[in-house]
Image (cartoon, rainbow, N blue to C red; front, side, top):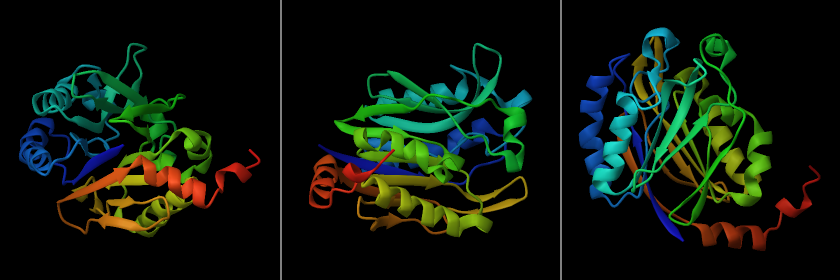
Length: 254
């Protein structure tokens, strides 16, 4: 029940999907060469955290989806990132898209759009969790600002070994990012993988701080302010042992 995570901390060229595909292709190849089974890209990996949903939101099977799908099926790995996507209801959503090695697709619509940046005025809000067995590791997916809201993590904790959180989290709130990643791991006794971008976008600076945290809150790997590849093995049996040795979850009253 071991899974090798390849967290790809990358820069993003603003609202230029083709340029970002070209930039990410060799990084994905390096992640595959390192034995990665679940490759994690950032939030809105092909555009940056744009509020220009009118021009940037793609169809469900648009170019960014096909980029993920081809990477997953060609390399026979799992690949995930979020995409501004317009659904059948005509509403754009910040949509996490997970593609399996066999091409099966799973999607999650961000539950908590970021009101501080007017995301709710440009993207709809999702209402359903996404939990997938990724190579027998029970994995739950969230996006960026969702990290601030513990309730959803708590609701899914007992059926989760690993949380994956792609983000575009700016430098000015980096202490919050690092602290919340560890808090979610500790309080839910699960692995947490947070993958943030680097570089500049729409006037904001991003310094990465991507990290893989174990169920005790220990940082297994972290990235600095440059593009980086974090490769870490996570094991569901470690989660099971942590919860057995220190049975916190059973004492929750909600």
